[in-house]
Length: 434
Image: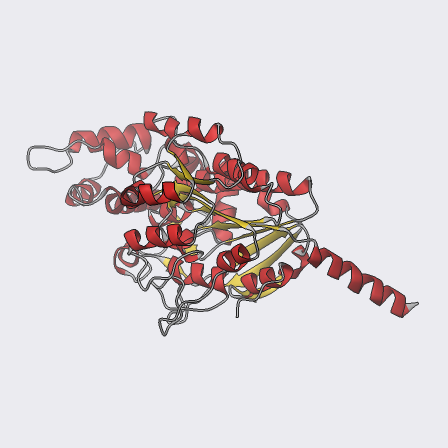
């Protein structure tokens, strides 16, 4: 009798493994445990992802640093190999590493990459490119074309413009707006290139404040379209979905903005699970590449103040006006911070700090403003100096969660290295990454 039960469960597990046809790999960039907790606190509700039936813990170090960047982490998640920070799809010796996307495409599966950042950014690029430096954006765009990824949705339009005629020859349809996205039909032999911003998409929290965002789809909208576009592939599909702006908000110590990005990522996960529940052949993996900024709350943290914020630090920076010398004016700083950051007053020290960054990029200035707002709210984070000068600009070595749903989900319980995730996926889909 004991032998019968052992055999039964072994056959059951094998049948589950054999059933994996589609893989939806969802990555919250910079989304550690604290990002999930903070988001739930600020949103006042439980995130859907915490209800997924299987969870585990993932360690994230790179080959040359205990603190990984997104390039090395993305490479580990895409290829099951450690590499050095800054490197994409190559090992520490510079040799190309085959990726899950590339391997699964060779079996006949259709492939897709969806992100709220530029499609040439580290995480999406890690699945389909092989470059020594993550900043080689034009070359990364060429790799995405070379690998004929069937669906590409995100930002980074400026890097693709020189290649549009070549993409057209490879049967890509170009779309640039939410309206065009909503009318896409999954026609046979057609590929899709959706470019919704010159670089990164805007923050979700600013959607009501920025008129142009009507042309930018949300992550959940892009995910829904991707699933409909890929679902009829006879041999299945591999889709990577990244909530990339979670990381950006983390670098800017902008917790209200980060929470809205986590929430939208959570909505995308809901779309994926709803799709998978109608089938028995789709595995969903949800994880992060690393944690950003070592964020946390303490007893004194002013949560109501953080909850009151309705626009991003980036939005506020762009509302500051400059004088004839190019400095942010005191009046505009005080007005914007009163209206949007809910500062009853602005100290002379804060004014001086903000005026000193008048000529910096919007992102760099937002790092400083986000830090000031979070300092007032007693938020715990990595130092501003580390964000501005560190190799990873504020990542931490903290482990990150992994959640799973569908056939083979139980394989992702317990603690593991990030390289174990693609190895498990490769076994469940019967491909080899070696």
